[in-house]
Length: 211
Figure 1: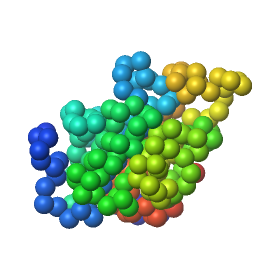
Figure 2: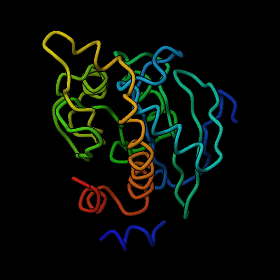
Figure 3: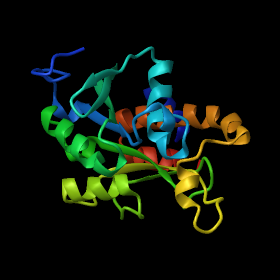
């Protein structure tokens, strides 16, 4: 399956980022996080970190648009719109809903990237639906979209914190050991995003879950 996957591999406010394209070939990739330099290297911002790694690899530049920073990437007839919401984590759904509507992207072409305390560090779970799991960004997304059926890419940050220290942990920075391992995990995450647009969610889940 991995061999199959590998073979597949700014604008004015008044205008859509991508014009006159089949909406089924447009994908909204949302990395969840909090804005501001103090959050840049925190575990909670892995969604931003993955999109930043994608942009660096493909020499893309984010520009500040309404409710977030965005950039676009085209590959094999597909257009990926990468979004880092500027609403802070608790209002992530507002930015997601706005850009889905503005770019006329179907819900099935949405992928939300988030940290997950219930998974070991670096573990990957891709799902087509599910609960918010206590994650405020997913909770607001679910509320705003009025559904739990949207694609999400959960990146494990583990639960290596003592009782009562969860907030400190998720808003804490990666350890040296984690940073050493992150590079390979970020490369894998970029592969997942491309696979989502080229191969579809089911093939992507089969190829990358638990990898």
